[in-house]
Length: 294
Image 1 (cartoon, one colour):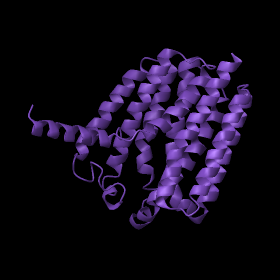
Image 2: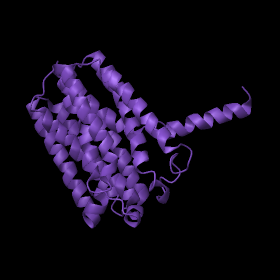
Image 3: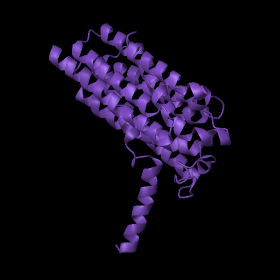
Image 4: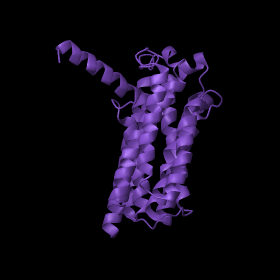
């Protein structure tokens, strides 16, 4: 293969990777930690290797599918936003129908993965697919698209319990709603980056909804998240290591607030990224706590 052909192949593959955001793994990380929380709680600290592999592969595939359908939904407005105007669809590097074909191909892969679980998990996956498809269109008619993202993010909890236990105990919904509140909080920081552009073009978000009360809303959501996880820890009989991890997570939230008091775009984006560490430290707390108690 000639050097020019190699460069051409690299450019083509790069645009598809960018469409699926595989060049930016932060979304995978932010999905990874709640997935691991759910599997460790559902498996009492020892989730099955089979489910671990299925869910880790599934989160990568579904995150990619979510990014593709999100860019398809936003293909007419991304070109008007400074941060997104160079994405493959608004830049004309990939056609809309090609993006849709990729989305359906990814969904087929996800379906093949979930078919290796059990009937209850398969039935729940239908709800997860529906939420993944609808979320990107919510910003057209509601200022709460982050709520849709939160539900999509948290849907892994009932699926993990279904896969591990074939049951849906009431306690799992505490973890579910904790993840919803956390997701709304960190995605509001993300939306604050684009708020000025969104106001000009009419795109809705919690950053637009909360306005000058954005920090108050985020702090309230993060506090609710921690309180819900404290309740979850009590219900699942967790030990002191778990609760220490929540205290460390709280310190991250405080630093996010202090760093974003001026609401500068770069600081808000950094606060959004910092939630990767929040998720990681909580998972380390859960896993270590189960390991020590066992």
